[in-house]
Length: 176
Image 1 (cartoon, rainbow, N blue to C red):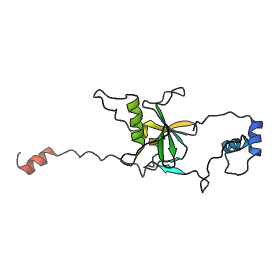
Image 2: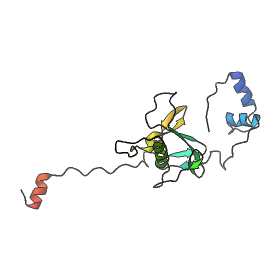
Image 3: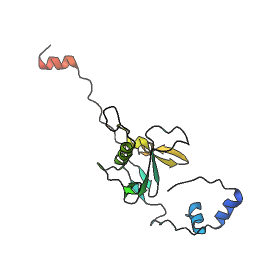
Image 4: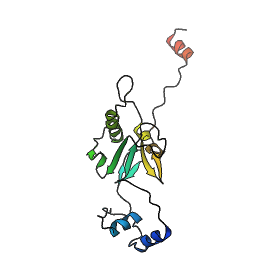
């Protein structure tokens, strides 16, 4: 789904609002109905269905994800890849991404990395965090999925073993 900002003048916005049939109806829904487009399927509740990507990240069905293998530099930079959230998973170019270890974000990124030959000097795919490289649009801005994680559900790497007291170890082994 391609989202485009359209600047509306007050008289046009008022006309759209005058045709609202339901409080939960968006301007997009109103325009789709007026232009005779097919309505989007409504979920049982007022919120669209979501897909859980783990660590508290829930994305709405129909939402687009944008992959930037390098940090986005500006509005004119095109993403390296696009994916769409559907009710049964993540899709790249109409093909469902098979999850690996419960996640479809990394496998989707790997498909695009392989296609773009995004490899290190050993010929391996560059190791990247999919949560940091996939973005969604929130309030008109690109936001990495990493920022959408729930702090209580965020996975953390195990801390490295604390430093060893060499003197105590040698004394314990009787090697002083």
